[in-house]
Image (cartoon, rainbow, N blue to C red; front, side, top):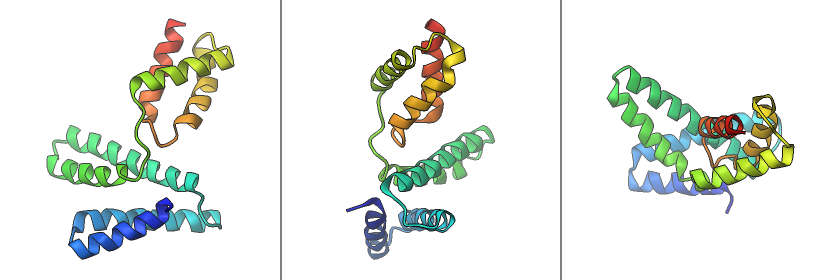
Length: 149
């Protein structure tokens, strides 16, 4: 079962169980997928669906950060609940050790020797971690590795 079908099935289950928060989040995700499908003009591949879900999760994380800085814990909690639902559909996140291994391999592959090669390394690592790692975390780890160089 693909992600789109899983979202549809989970939406039906949320309707039956009366889980309004989950239902609302899944409806939002399905709307974003439909918008992307219309924008691209074709049925979405699993990778394109993952990209949309990753983007949605990133927006939630940024919103949580902003709400917490502003002292709005009520809104922050709502965003955290939505993020939890979205993460159910994303692949299991990579741990820091796994990320460091991928970064080391990318540095070796590109022959990177300093911060000037940051973009080359990021391109390779992000293509391998799509949906499984936070971009900011990857960025920080790549910078650390290249600085140690």
